[in-house]
Length: 312
Image 1 (tube, rainbow, N blue to C red):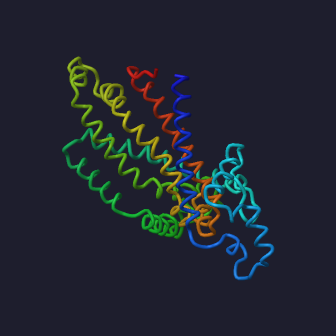
Image 2: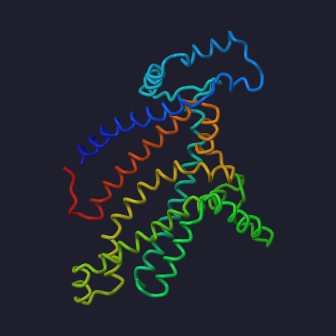
Image 3: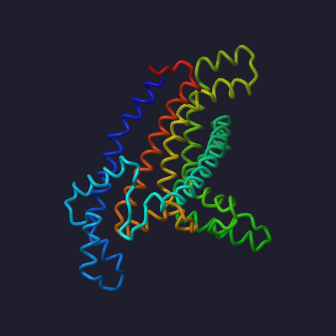
């Protein structure tokens, strides 16, 4: 097991290098000058501009700039912005906001998706099954931007007017309640996909021979479904949830903008506009690490769910 973990972490190194190189190249190719953006509408003194470009290696070739970034990254330094701010300090507080939002969305997704999928699978071919499938299809078809504004109006504004102040419209002034509505919006599409995946996986598992044998032996229906069918059907669900956690972390740009949450998605949008390469690449680096660690945890959970799986 230990060798397997080490091997997976070593395999993550070229993935990390490739992702940072690609993003750094895209940001490098964007038009505009970060120094001029820093000056705003005013014209910066040419001497000061030259000093800033030299300090941050902006006049160096692309590969040399990338090498300077990698050198700092291997020493645990995500770099500094043109304005002199530390990328690590900028992302520290914002990363926690996005992580809280992603975890809230993941919990909602797991509870609602598995619950609805189980409900539909146990009523396969009935009206309830068709209703769940139709509802998930509608949810998949609606963009998160539209869902965000609609839920803000219905659950944030109208409920408050009716005397039920349950969901803050924006910001984090209300503490953990500020994550509920954006978490639901962020998890909306994933809930629909996980519901369908759970339903399909469980329906196929319930048709297996060992399920028929367990039923023929007289085991209670609840035990057959919960201990035998659902446990084996969870393997593709765990795979989806592990990969989707990284997607939730990286896909929070629209949600954080709509609900005015100070997370890394909002910071990423601002940094792309200002051509702050270190911030953009720093965010991507963190997201790649999250993807790698999430997939590693998923692989290790396979052995817990299915003892036949072994790592050599």
